[in-house]
Length: 185
View 1 (tube, rainbow, N blue to C red):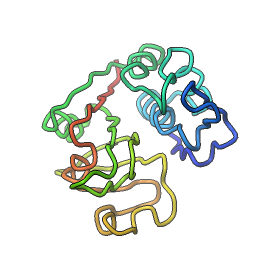
View 2: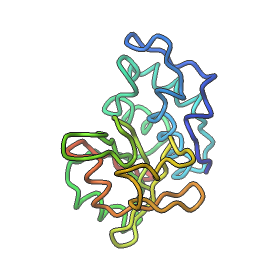
View 3: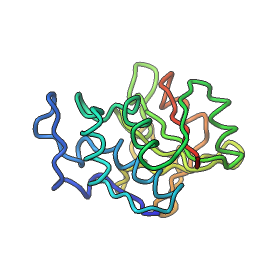
């Protein structure tokens, strides 16, 4: 499986009616997450360029970013995955701890009572696994110093492309936004 950092894809256009100059660097977290999910679960190469084409063709790129409510069923069907969405954090943690598959989380970013750890605005991340309450995260916006800023410092431990955080940090970041669970069919 490749780790895909959206910042490496500024040259790939990803326009929408609300973001006519959009590209994968500034709007591609969802397609990069989908690429990592597919490659991790299937072993099939599915680079962000191909993921973006599928997102556009199924209508998941009509606003800002990628609408995972539309994209999750489309790429799951195309790549032979089972998926579900849930707001239940216990379901998410149990799914990860038992190794059933991987999860795409949708962070809310900064709010009145929370400083976003994985982003200051809405952003998709892959929850790759969990051991106890420690979650391994693949953040497609990974960049040097990303987790060293005030409010983020000390909440994430990096090992290469793997970011580790307590599940409470993930929940704080995602608030009441849906989680998308993916597993092999």
